[in-house]
Image (cartoon, rainbow, N blue to C red; front, top):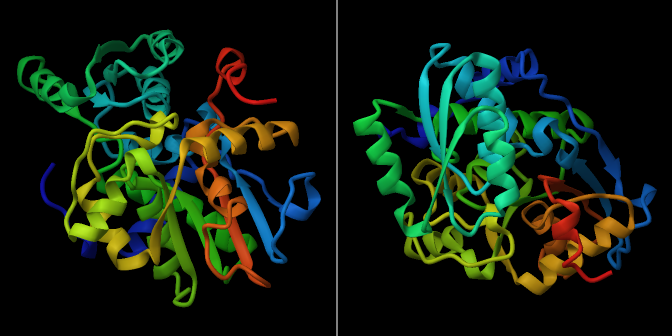
Length: 323
C-alpha cells in the first residue's frame, strides 16, 4: 500500500464514501440504533446509551461498508487477494461474487473452519496458514498470481466506507458525549472517529476496545508507532498480527484512548446479549463488554453510543458460552 497520511481523510471524502456505500449494489443497510433502556440488558450506570446493531448488517458485520467502497473504486472482474479471520473475508467473498471478481482469502489457521467453508461457498479460494505467515502468503499471491491486495483494515477506501457508520450515528444522536467501538486492526475505530470528529463533534470522547491478548493498538499508542504482536483472543476478529498504519494515525488524532478487556469479560458479554435476544459474536461485543464492566470512564448522565459490530457466530460456537 502506498503511504497515505491521515490528512487524506477529509469530511468531503467521507461524505462521498457515505453515498457510495448507501447506493451500493451490495445492499448495505442503515442498521437500527436502539435505546438500551428499551432492551432487557442489565445496566448499573445512569446514562442514556444507544446500541448500534451492526450485527444485523448485510453479511453479519460492519465490514461490508468498507468492502462496498473498496470494490466501487476498483475495476470489475479484477483478481484480488486479502487476509481475514472471517468477517472481512465473508464480505469480500460476497462482493467478489456480485462483481464477478476472482478472489482469494488467506486465513489464519485459528479461524473457525465454518468461516472458511462459508467463504468458499461464494466461489472464493481460501488458504489457511499460521498467523505469522499471513502477509508472506498474501505477497506471494500478489507476485506470482498478479492479484491486487485489498487490505482488510489498513486502506483509505475501506476506512472511508466504515466511516458511514459514524455518519449514521450522528443522524440519530447529533452530539454524542461518548462513543465506544471495538478495535482490531483499527479500520472501524478510525473511520467512525474521523466521521464524528470531522463532523464537528469536538467534545465527543471516542474509545476503542481491544482484548488484552491482542492489544496491538493499545501498544501502538504507548510506543507512538504501529506495532505487531503474537495475538491470542477468543475474539479472533480483533486479533490481527499488527495495527494498521493509517488507522493508527487516525486513532492517535481522534480517539481518546484504548481500553482493554479480557476473554472472560467477552464471553460473559456474548451470553448476556444472547439472553436478551441479541446474537453477537465475541469480536462484536467488545464495546458492550467494556461498558458493562465499568472500563469506560465518566458515563454518568451522558449520551453514549455502543457499537455491536458483528453477529457471525454459529450454534456450534454459541454452545461453548456460559448460559
